[in-house]
Amino acid sequence: MKKGLLFVWLVMICLISVSLAADQTDSSTVVVYYFHTDFRCPSCHKIENYTKEAVEKYFGEDLESGRLIFLPINTDKEGQQHFISDYQLYTKSV
Image 1 (cartoon, rainbow, N blue to C red):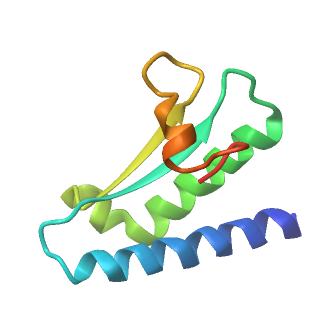
Image 2 (cartoon, rainbow, N blue to C red):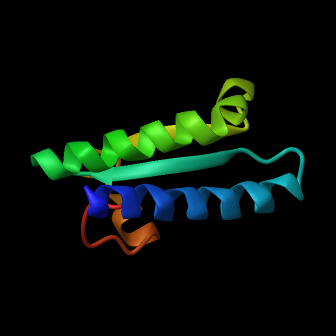
């Protein structure tokens, strides 16, 4: 439980930082990606759910306005592998 709460707080801090940066340019859209693969354990699903919950709870207005988008990406799908090199991914990540 403590790990889950810590994760939610870390996500919130990251989102606040991204949101503050986005406020400086009115026309920007912020995308919160959750990168995963075909194989997903219970913890992987929890990470996605905690992230989505934090985004909806603390940035609902930005979601509704389209300034913020939550987008899960399966890096095993064709055409999505570029994210691995683009963001230097080595595991599932937010």
